[in-house]
Structure formats: structure tokens, C-alpha cells
Amino acid sequence: MTTFTIKSPFGLSKISIEDNGLQKLGAYIAEHHQEARIAVITDNNVAELYHDKIKSSLPNADIFVVEASEKSKSMKVAEALCEDLLEVGFGRNDVVVGLGGGMVTDLAGFVASVYMRGVPYVVVPTTLLSMIDAAVGGKTGVNLGAKNIIGTFYPAEAVLVDQAFLKTLPERELKTGMAEAIKYAAILDASLEEVLMAKKTDYQPILEKCIGAKVKVCNEDLKEGGLRKVLNFGHTLGHAIEFLSHYKLTHGESISIGIVLANQIAQNLGKQTKAHGDRVVEMLKKYNLPTDLPKGMKLAEVIGMVNRDKKMEGEKVTFILSPKMGQYEMVKLTPNELMKYLK
Ligand SMILES: NC(=O)c1ccc[n+]([C@@H]2O[C@H](COP(=O)([O-])OP(=O)(O)OC[C@H]3O[C@@H](n4cnc5c(N)ncnc54)[C@H](O)[C@@H]3O)[C@@H](O)[C@H]2O)c1
Ligand SMILES: [Zn+2]
Image (cartoon, protein in one colour):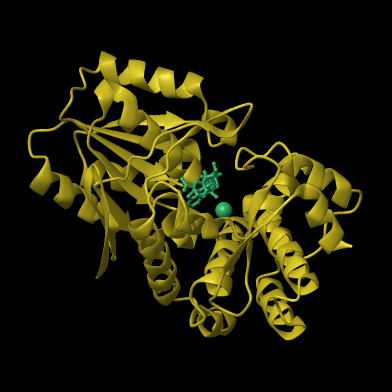
């Protein structure tokens, strides 16, 4: 078992990477929340695959199933879940468990943070993306027109990461998580390159290195005042691409293209060698991730979207570059400058 800890104003958030995650969940709750009621929030795909295991680990839990869709990350669904909790007599010391991918963990974390001003929250991520990113570091949220407009910082008291869930994860979702792993390699941990290029079926080293990198960043800057912005590498343009594809591209596929464009900007600014950029592209290709804008999508449209990004500060956006494997640099650029360096 490998463990990490994030310090937050709400106390410690303990992340453990270990086998038999669902079984451990029951044991964890029995140890830390003996008398508590448990509400498991999950989506229909995960519920179908893991219902019996949830029941055997937490026989008395109420299970609330939302539709497996980004649309479930809404105030409407969050409110309905709060109503459900109230109906079953859920109180301040009872425990919300988020079991699923990032959609579920963002939603369940949000509900846990606002229901009765916050109840204990435990998370069991089931996608690679949620294991190495969404479930770690306490960002919760729901969408309101645009993504994550309403949300809180509320780190789960425990994050139980078990790679066994990845056995049932569709290939495309696995790829999406890999784009985030490549992000960590490019800006935070050069030693991930070798691990990712080896493409082994044991995810333990990938989980350890990626979670370790994110924990380090969150411990320095939980609320994204500074350093945490580095995690937006590939995301400023990636988010725009995801939106413009009408979500036909997954988050990871969009980020993959965003990373390639960020590298192009870095090279045109004289801050990255072509050899390093090519190495990153090689990693993305190893996992069949796209590296070009989809047909019909125009660069001007992508840059146009950046103007509406909630992370814009005045005229400029903090843009993250990767000068060398495992290293980052922040530059402030206007959308016009982004366009200039992409030509
Ligand atoms: N809070 C954060 O810091 C943060 C960071 C990154 C992303 N996010 C959010 O995460 C969300 C995306 O998360 P995601 O990529 O995990 O997608 P997701 O939660 O939508 O899951 C993808 C699909 O995989 C299915 N699934 C989940 N686990 C499975 C399993 N073990 N076996 C089979 N199928 C399984 C789901 O039902 C769904 O159909 C977005 O809403 C994004 O905004 C949040
Ligand atoms: Zn991401």
C-alpha cells in the first residue's frame, strides 16, 4: 500500500493506493464512522458492474444512482440528491461516498460539501482520470451552462484508489486518463516518461507517480492561487477544443491536442526544443491519442473560446509550457499572442 496526505483547512485528506478498494471501504467506515449512515453516490454503469460488491462491503448503505452523463453534474441533480439524503434521515455525522469517475466524484463531493454545511466524504475513484486527477485535491463542482461554474474546495477525508476498477473501464476512457498522465510527465515528473513508454498493464507506478505529483502541487497551493495552475498544461486550449467538438472528443483527447498546441507555442517562443516536443507527441501516439485539431475545427475558433475562459485575468491567461521533460514554466499571454505563436 502507498499513501499520500494532503493538508487542508478541513483536516487531512489521506489517499491510499491499494488492492481490494471496495472491501477496504467497508473496513474504513467501520473503523472511522461506526454509527454513521452511509450514502453511496454512483452512476448507472458503475452501479451495474459493482452493485454486489458495494452491498457486500457496505450492506446497510443507501445507494443513489445518477445517470452516467456529464449532464448529471448539475444543480438539479445535486439538489435531488440532497432531498434524497434528507428523506432517508441523513445527518451531519453521516458519510457520503462518491464511487465512480470524475463526474460522480465532482458531484458527490459537491453534495457532501454543502449538505448540512458539509458531511464526511470518502471517495473511491473508478476511472484512471479520477484516480490520478479528479478525486485528488478537493475540487468539487457542478456545471451551469459552462463547466464547473458552481463548486467548492472540499478534499475527501479518504481517497481509496484501487487499479482493479480499470479492468472494466472502456479503452477510450483509459486513454483519456493517459493524457493526464502524460501531462504530469511533461511538466512535473520526467521519470514517468519511461514508465508510460513501457506501457505495462500494472498501473501501480503510474498511479504512484501521478498522484504523488498532484499531491505535491496541492500541498503547496490547494486553492489554485499560483502553483496549482501548472495542472492546466494543455487545458487552456484543450477545454476549448472539448467544447467546440460538442464533447464528441473526450476530455483526454482534447487535452492531448491542447498539449501539442502548447508545445508549438513553447517552441515558437524559443522555450522548448523540437526534440522534446516530438518526445511528448510520441507518448501521446503510444496511447493512440489525437495530436491534430479535428477536421473542420478552426484555430481562430479555439482561441476565440479562450477569451471566455473563467481563468482569464484581464486580457491575459496564464499559459503553461513544458521547457523540458518534467519541468514547467508559466507565461502570461493574450489570446492574440496565442494565435501569433501558433502560426
Ligand atoms: N475535480 C477535479 O479536480 C477534476 C479534475 C479533472 C476532471 N474533473 C471532472 O471529471 C469529469 C470526467 O471524469 P471521467 O473522465 O472519470 O469521466 P466519467 O466520470 O464521466 O466516467 C467516464 C465513463 O466511464 C464509466 N465508468 C466509470 N468507472 C468505470 C469502471 N470502473 N468500469 C466501467 N465503466 C466505468 C462511467 O459510467 C462513464 O460512462 C469531468 O466532469 C471533469 O470536469 C474534475
Ligand atoms: Zn484534465
